[in-house]
Image 1 (cartoon, rainbow, N blue to C red):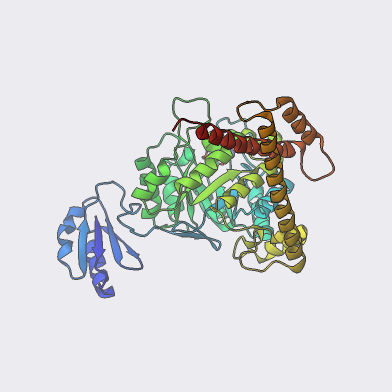
Image 2 (spheres, rainbow, N blue to C red):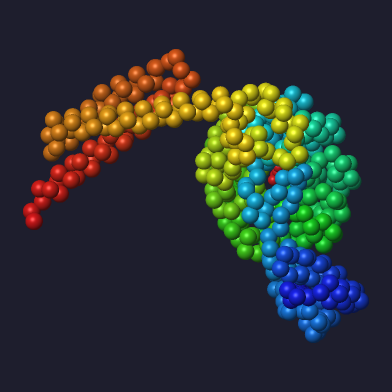
Length: 465
Ligand code: PEP
Ligand code: MN
């Protein structure tokens, strides 16, 4: 049951509602929003307070049909924002990328990865210390030493850390060294663990059980919330279906559905959701478009040699390209230098390492240094020259078309192939042959479009009136 107080309700009236609820042996969860206060009533027989609507200051009493109450959007009309080490997730905040290795394998690989993902704009670091593996013979994680390494990576980069807790007995230990306790898919139904993380002061990232319905998942969240921890982030990570082409079936419809039913922030993990490296970026972008508040992405310095989940881990350049796409589509606005409010140490470290490049994309709040401004001015000039040259080239292509005869169809395919081959061989600059080939491919396609428009106009001109 949810008791909605009127906007003008006084504190004393809210207290009276809470006391009445508690006097009946029920629990009252008071949630103070910007406009109004809402009291969630939880217990086995909430009908005992069926008449609570007659108390002063109560506007409405909603009987909840869903079995979850505290997780319900009705209980909390405003979406929840969970703040992790200064990084806000949910309630209209920009998308947060949480990235790092599946497992912490060594100090060096963790620090390299943490530096890289931060450099590319991730706002939080992930890394497994205790790994719940299907096989008892598989790498089980480094355990406690990994927690120390995660703490070191956090101290250097300023990135808050997410790591999975697999045992209720470890909650306190983990809570003292990581910022977010992850409950993994295999443990979503471990009610002892859910209650234990519910008593922790740390936010919880609750992954969807691979065989769990959305309602069961929200009931698992309800365990954490009703144990006293209101900082729960849900994480869709794929469910098991009859499809075997992917490791799991990433249920992206869960994102807008959850937005309808719950106020809790929503993360998506396309790494476990697909199990395949080349599917991760497209599904990450789709998750962002569907309204995810955060992404959980596995990144490894050498995926083929990873001790766990190599096939789904992005390499450093692949993660960089994904972040570029997320920025281009404006799901992410921050650059490396803007990440993390409490990241002063890391910010300096990154700035020192990256030199002038640290200004890239992170310049929203600061004007770029004079040399950066000057270089960007030169880039603008080059871009203008390229645009003029492209128009000149397309105009020549139209002249060729006129000379060839507008009725005749036919490009010189051999010449085009030669051009692409030449482009692929051009060396002496920072672009790779494939990148040059892609650019010339796009130029050729654009030229052909211009020719097609011209030919179409010619056909229409000659049509009988
Ligand atoms: C993980 O994120 O490291 C993990 C094991 O994920 P899941 O619980 O979703 O399988
Ligand atoms: Mn993994």
